[in-house]
Amino acid sequence: MKHKLELIYFKMRALAEAPRLLFHYTNIEYEDLMSWDYYDKEWSEVKPNIPFKQLPMLVIDKKHEICQSMAIMTFIENLAGINITDPILNAKANAIMQSAQELFMPLNPTVNFAIGEKFIKKKDDMIPFLLSRFEDLEKAMKNNDKKFFIYDEPRACDFVAFHHLDLSKMLDPSIIKKFPRLEKFLEDIMSI
Image (cartoon, rainbow, N blue to C red; front, side):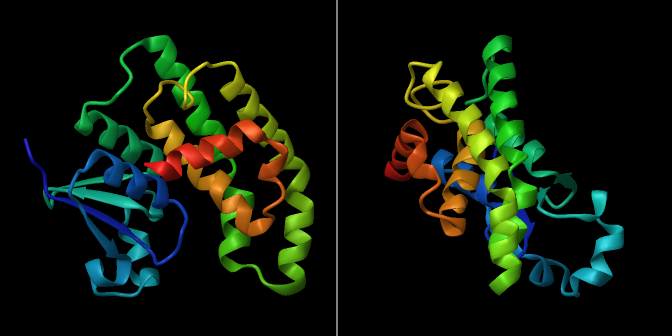
């Protein structure tokens, strides 16, 4: 069954990036709309009426509103028929996705909004956290003999991890170079 899908977000590389990548990978048609175009109002006027008061939001068939990027990723996986049915592998994929998503708060606001001395301070403050999380993700990749975190074909967790790891290069391109398996992972995702 084909659905009309509208992904509502802002003009930035942040929480809607992984859903966009997964839509592209699975060849699912959707419309990528900016909040102000979809609502024809300023975000401050719309925000109080949005579920969870945040975007992204996936509108399905003009009547179902799915918020939270992880829920959107799960929906896309299910719609594409690439959801992980093995409960153990699915739990491992969810752990990867949640761990990668925890990179959002320090990384995305800094890369997207901080400038000058504020950028440098925020970058310096978050480096220990990034190194620790990257080490965990590197270990997860090494514990698996597959091309991606779970399989030889990417799943939602891979696109979430890719987004944050790739975005980290805008913060400091040398960080990822300390993690050769993650660097290869980025190359593998970019090759598709």
